[in-house]
Length: 608
Image 1: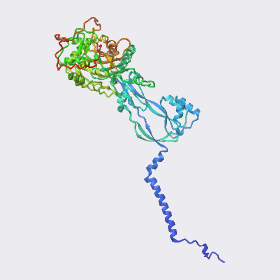
Image 2 (image 1 turned 30 degrees about the vertical axis):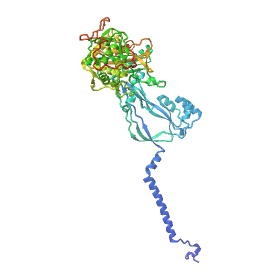
Image 3 (image 1 turned 60 degrees about the vertical axis):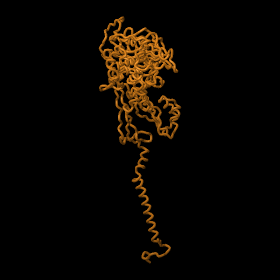
């Protein structure tokens, strides 16, 4: 029998599938494939950036490329602030798993307390924490030699100041993030600061760079900055001021040295000082820049301006004789001199520093006239050098002045100035009545000043200021061998709790040299000398003499005075006209209505 020739027809063995069911199954499979295709298209096409970023976040990093801060140079190109490469140590706590022994070794290499290191590594949810920043390459190498898992190093830059405390108050310093904190570093932050670059790299799970993908931004180095400061003069000024403060057991001191023809700041120092390379134990008082941030009553160093106003108004001449006597009563208060004389010429009033004579001349002028001159000289307003913390000082409106206040302001009480302001004001006498703007940047072009006094008045005033340093003047110790110099002393009582102290003084001297063709202007203040000497001519003038003598020689300035000085020679009187006697009973004819005699607190006499 042939079984292959017949088909099995048993109904239970035959599979029968309805047509609609097969079509449904086919459609279901097609829909599933469409869904998978759509999902794939969405993930790899429409949402690719998101997924790519998520993927790269596991291993691709953008790292900063540090930029070096611009160097600060003196006027001759010598570095005053530079950036040096240093290493900083950081860690990923999530990847650090150390026993006590390993942490002890790490802390020792970092020169940190073991507990501090443990605390910084305690939070395992963090991927970044600084352990210690700005290490020397040698110390960083010792740390990395431990091969501690999860501990890495990073290149940074640290500011270094070659002159240390000598230029501290001028240059200032930067913080840990290389941002300017004080001085020029802060004032010129936008110029000096570099712009960090960025690059994309691939890192492994231990934080090691295994591939450099691309540079995103090229770092831009900071621009170098050339100052007007001369490091040689800065060193001289720092040395002499420090010696004077120490020898006089003073609370502090300040010195500002300007170029008499350009207004450039050649030196600026303060005491106490600090070392910007090591600020671990500094005190805020050491960082204060007294020369620009502190204001004080200038005392007799202010007298030349009141006398200049009287000369400019034509009410006196250098030879005009004024009866000074033993006192001048103003508004119920008596103004006296330290060394009273019956009468003095205007030139002698400057040379001997007479409060009475100066006040008499000031009282013959309208208050608006004096205020206008003082304001034109920059008193009561900021010097606008851009230096951080510079003060405006205090100069009240003329309409508020009482007679006694107008009198005391003429010899430096009742208003306040900074050392930088008073030094700048003396450019009036070195530039034929032109006031120069001051700057901490080296000037590359001619400076344009403001004509405040006539050239004739300025020259007359300069001749009288020269007698102050000659025999018989209050600043004979300010003389410079071989050079003619001029200036004015000041010894002002300090205001303490609203009252003038009987024992605390600020001793000052402002001068310039050589007198025949001024090159340098210098203002020196010594705060609260306590070694017995208090007069500006004894305390501050010698500092001026020492610094000026060496600075003039360094600059190659030819001497303008005989090497041998006749100590007994009477100084030349700049007077050029007949004398006019003015007595207390018959004062100079007032130019305004007599003042009222309202009682106010009177400033003490200035000791010149």
